[in-house]
Length: 144
Image (cartoon, rainbow, N blue to C red):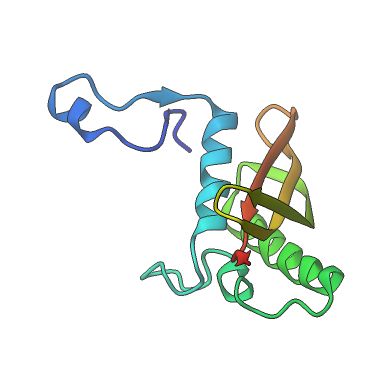
């Protein structure tokens, strides 16, 4: 496996000017790849239809049980990370849904969004170091 890791987004103007792509470390490269998995819908990748995760199918689904939704998404993400991120092992994924209320008094609007917190813990294969990734997404907003 290559020891060269590059930061995203790629700045192609730097490639054309001769300075090359901006390098990054192993941990950041793994985080970039996990973000790519999260933000890719199943079937979006032309050659690997199972690359991605299920959040795009679950986003507009009526959430009857938050715990069932969290578990379904957690399993989907764990499978995709296990299948496509080979640089880590002993992977644990946590998913939590919370409601966030934003009040805009001048416009007399209240917006309620579902926030999904995603935490990934693992070990890096080459070094045995602990790996930690955390991000949050907002699902479809409800407004009044």
